[in-house]
Image (cartoon, rainbow, N blue to C red; front, top):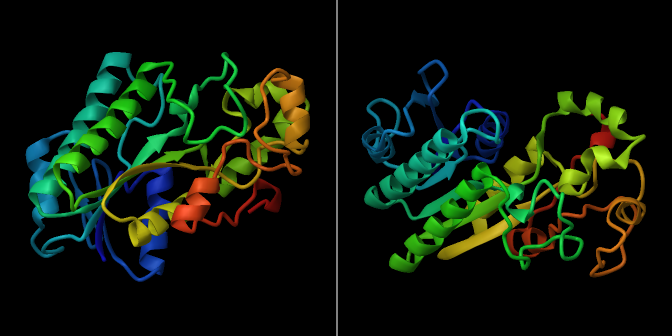
Amino acid sequence: MRIAVTGSAGKLGQAVVSHLVETGHSVTGLDAVGAPGEGFVRVDLADSGQVLDALAGVEERYDGLDAVVHLAASPAPGIRPDTVLLQDNLAMTIAVFQAARRAGITRIVHASSETLLGLPLTEAPPAAPIDEAQPTRPNFMYAIGKHLEEELGRKLCRLDADLSITGLRFSNVMAPDDYAEFDSWQDDPAVRRWNLWGYIDRRDGAHAVERALAVRGPGYETYIIAAADTVMRRDSAELMAAEFPRVPLTRPLAGRETLLSIDAARRDLGYAPRHSWLDGR
């Protein structure tokens, strides 16, 4: 496919571009930062006119696209004032979704967020592992924005029966260089209780994007995307007993398995995470 990746200069975006190229796709990165050249076009993604023009085609780069991967955003709360962060993230998503529709692109994958699962978990989750069946519980403006982006995707797919939009609720994205910090968390499980000790290696995040592009049909769907394990060396049942003793478990837990359920992504997308922080690379 001919694919545009917004936010291509980011931690996850770099891995997505590399993986999609490795799997045989033609990829162009769209971002506000970076040196224009083959494989990259500089775009202000909050400017709907620029986005529409970019998705329609860019001279000497590409003429039309088959799919869009939308990762661009202020990636977490606290980076910018709350209202500005909400407005800008929504503006980018609205511009990308609508421009894709206008350009006849029917396949979109976008970055949603684990923050919709009730993070930070100062209030205990209703059950664990957390899965997509649990209602969204946004607790700050960044998460509210992700909720609204998901709802936009659902409503656009209702309007257009051919449109396929997939929201990937990525856990805390990590690059291999980040793993050196993990040992500092091991003495106190409370340090990372805020997201049930979840994370996602950016290479596995890129794999999830590729699978969603490959297999998803029309309509809107969301999937939690996390590593197969947690950021801790302790077993997951022990972590839950220490920090969330009253939270019911929906099934027995095996060893260090993730407490952010990836069962749906495995079943529907063929998602198969291969990387663990314990591998050290």
